[in-house]
Length: 414
Image (cartoon, rainbow, N blue to C red; front, top):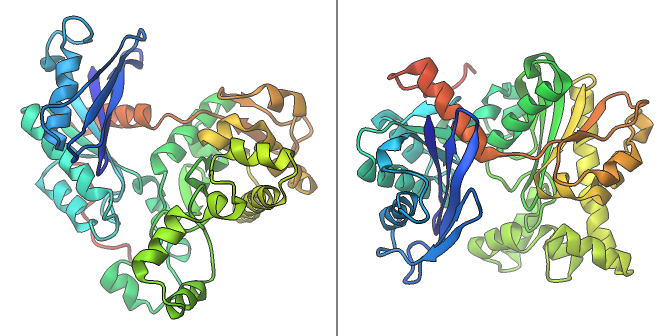
């Protein structure tokens, strides 16, 4: 089966084409600046052949048409015809409470995506636009929606509820949802494979650390807590997001004359490592380089980043009553040996230890980096959300054949 994976954003469309028999990528790329007068397609074939071109139209349909033209191009393509694409998988950021697993796209599933527009206004409308573009170009080809929030929907009410008047949940769906679910799902299952056990038998703490950061506590295949909340702003300190803070900070900023729009931009785009380090970059490599040169503000930012991760890992280790493994993924988690070492050293008192040599040799590859004395494994597993989406497409169509898989039940029992 050949599967096209689409990640449609408000101003971009990323894609990958997989041959699922051996799970190989045939081609990938993205269209930048969708919706502007200067869209640009960057295409790359599996053997390194690349091409850039300008789509004829600047909307998501135009972006997809340009992608399709490259895929079947006699010179640079990987398909003889579009009919070789047997199914399409879509990243959808928010599925609310009704989407607890990947779902074959139907009118009902599109309704679920629309119902979550208010919860993910920057993402869900674009995700739906990508689905509808595929429906126009690929007639009668099944589309499967894979929701970022779905993997976390196993959380119990004591984890997902906020300590607010209960009617805010029942009337307005104000609760914690969690994000990066596709990534956490992928690395949790990969950890099970590396350890020779089904992930449904393991207790895992998965750490997705990049520009966006989140941690999940997974107990025998079920997420019981995760750091992100109603939006991806809650939780860890991130590249440009503040993470956890006293809600009264927002009230004080309003009193100081900041508008809601200014506060939203500050907390999501101007805070985190970028805001604290003060070096004009949110890239951990730049933060560490400045720290090594003696920049005290960069040092402070890195220490804050480390401390918050340690706090969440410690809390989740207690919540799980121990863990079989701590898994690092994401740009920082996979590539920053320095960051991993700083985090794990603060966990030495719990009996969690690194093998310093293996850690320093591990960059962007999967490995077990803990010492033999460690009470639990510490692992690095490069995440692959696109492959996880493609796998979800295959499993959804195999299990379900023609019926939609979206959960359509009412809210969890109160």
